[in-house]
Image (cartoon, rainbow, N blue to C red):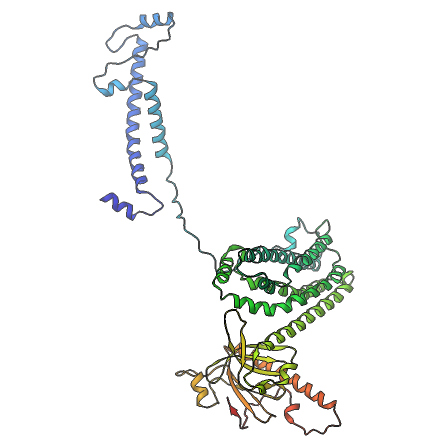
Length: 529
């Protein structure tokens, strides 16, 4: 019973049996010490008697010993003493088997008593995966150089560091794009998780970007000299940057790709496959869309890197004249990609609008070329709406899904508001000035209504007002900023259009000339939504 209690209370890395053995070995060590002492004394006495030529009975054995010496024989003679007990009998006996056994036991006892206790073995536990993304090993250019030249200035070192960062970024992007192709695209195609057509819509022209960046990486690495420094990088950038126009097709496709990917995640097989990939170590805790968005993130980083290289380039350097040209070129390409992507996004969501009435089809919606922003807001009844701020109109919608395989559509809620006729009212926290329905929807208990604003429309036969609530203060400020920008640009556009038609008499409307007007204390009678 005691032993069982010892096993339960002991730590799992130590065995209670091991502790009992160590204790037993200590007792055997004491016994072995006494035994060795007795054996030594017995052997010494036997040797003395042999030197005198007498055995234990006093018989002279020198003649027999001489006789044995004169007559060689293979027979091994071992003197045996006449001990009174068993201990006396075994003491002087030196049988090889017993001797080997005794030496083995003695070595074992000596090892166990002299050795220090082993340190506690660590308990093996399954490590939990980190919740943070696995980062790449960041290495500086100076880490790759054995010794920096004394003649190299701090500015030149900074320049080499940025060029090295540009090179390493290309290498990492190529690795990620190849990973997406081999780990996501090909397995999902082989396992029939998605059809080839669906994968083509989601991945777009990603496959064509890999050789493009491999070419750029080769050019950058060829610029590196024997001392791992790059003398002139501007001409290479000017020659390669026009290849980035291929990003127009890829980025324009991303709008529909994201919508289709979100829709396919409702499929259990797709969701399970993507989740297993994200939990694997190779993904660095990134999901598929993070990888698909890497080329766009890389594109907008080129101007930042070029500015840093330009800052570290002295006036007498050959790159001093070519870098500004390369920076202007890449900025123009990024601007064109953003413009085309905005147009594609506008067209995608415009096709997804469902109108309940024909009067909701404002011409401003069809003429809009891009979206300022869109997202989820709550109205004064607490209903969640998906609001689109197009270039020329503000449209409130309700997301609807007909079935799993059909894309999400947006049913237009109430009458859309032209951006040129918008009035914006910033509602301070706690002042839900919209009647009891507003306070009942946004306020619970003693809480105050927060992050609310109101948009209304004037200049049309029927005015409308919508009280909306954002998720947080940052989201609210983003909406207000975009609304102001849309109001300014729309009114400027209408003003210019009116000036181009001088023969037509128009009554002046102050709402068309005020820029970013905020009607904080509006007394106009409006139909509250």
